[in-house]
Image 1: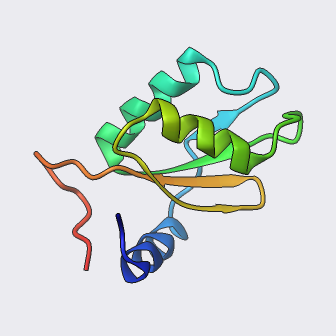
Image 2: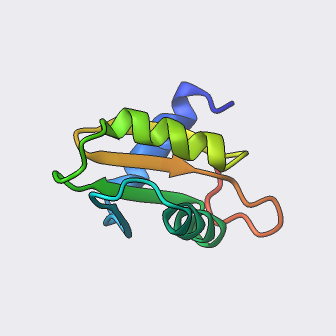
Length: 97
């Protein structure tokens, strides 16, 4: 579990990054989960955009991703953007306070 200070730090980092994954009208597919998994392995912090064509709420989609990606933490859902974090124990890129 991350502390509120760590979450705030990750949110501040997220202000400088762009979403690298988009969830479209098909919702969360195996391909989407695979892309998010690879991105988390490479970057640790991933911003995902949920397009307006998706009927599901971004918060519900985030819960599905968390269920399918063990060790991943939801940092926040703001509007149609989901921010996920998973630390890389072997080669950490983000050092948390």
